[in-house]
Image 1 (cartoon, rainbow, N blue to C red):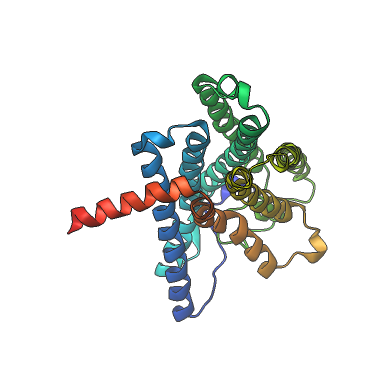
Image 2: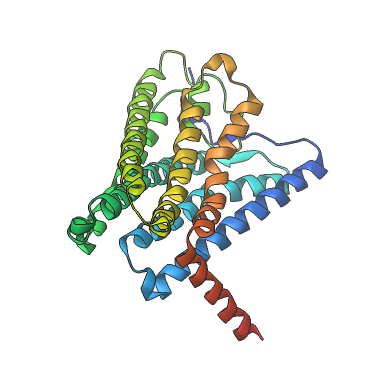
Length: 311
């Protein structure tokens, strides 16, 4: 039996053996990565430098954008570098770092999305108590709790995963170090501990999603009672983007780790991984900016100011 510590590196999935397709993969991932950096960077800049956006909703959106930038930076640059240099290798420590940071960031993001659902619930269903429920101190504590839960989850999974002996080599069928793929390399009698931890984490993720859905049930009930059509439209424009983001994030994570082994295939695993690790950080800024008039107005002013300075 060989232990995971006997490996100096792991071999990741190669998108193609053809050089032209490797360069195409590099170009596509580079475009997605730059789009994610630009979109989230603009949102962070707009919120930091505009006093009108210094509110709990935008404070949490700023945290989400930071998490998205860090999340896509954990997996995509290494995959691009491998395609560019025609290699598949990732060091043992690099693999452990990917597992740690991906669990940290995805767990923190799930917790933060749940907090954002509570913020919308407090704003629409408890408007008279909103300033008390979402005071600056309360917001800071909720954000800290979201980030802290990510750290604890990452430490737990990383320690468990890399203490399991590997008996099936060091070749993974994924473009980054994914726990599900590492478990496939483990000894058949050694993965149950990490599987139990994973089940606990997925229950927490599902719990967060159920809490968010119940919050939105209450929100939509309250919105439908608003007599003004303009008021209803404004409330929906604030809530629908967040509901879309949390649905995309949670559903893809649950599919990735709960799909039956009988339907698992390299192509399906790759597609699902792209959906939960690459697509959300790039799409989230677009979803929020398209439905939020106030944010669109600030972003438009920022772009106009940048154009004037360039000229």
